[in-house]
Amino acid sequence: MEIARLHLHDPADWPHLRRECLEFFSRCGGRRLKAGHIGHLAALSYEALHQPGTSIVAATVRGELGSMPIGISYAADYGKEACMTAVHPLYRNRRIGSSLLRLQISELGQLHCTVATGHTAALKMCFLAGMHAEGLEMDAAGRPVLNLKGVDIRPAAVKGASPDSNQEGELLCLSLS
Image (cartoon, rainbow, N blue to C red; front, side, top):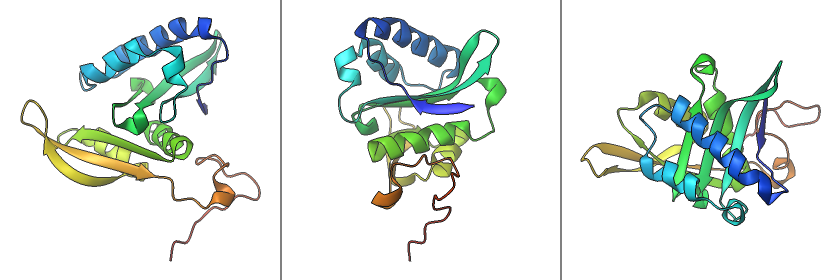
């Protein structure tokens, strides 16, 4: 499995890739993803994809037909405009979603999202990624949602290292005391 940020160099590739991401979110995200966030991704231009605070990361596995996505995370404006993560049902409960969020946090420096208090799987994923609750609000339907935030607290010396790898010479534990 490989987890990496999406980097496109040819704008002509973006419409096809955006469609693949949208299809993955609709197939694997269930009804828990906000329609506004899906609409935000659907309207995202190639130029907006490269704006600070906007990122798409994917977890992929290699198959007979090439690389296949098993998880995707999308954030716009550091998650303030849109933040959604989906993992293929066959690959859930393996902390892939948390790994995607950790990479988003390390790439962007910070990440914000809102999660319904009744969506325990999403809350677990966010907390395992190191996010913390900053507030409790009511959504448009009157249901409680938690405002979550994750911040990259790694020292500058290790910020270039992947948050989920144990390469020789990397710090395995950070003491914050």
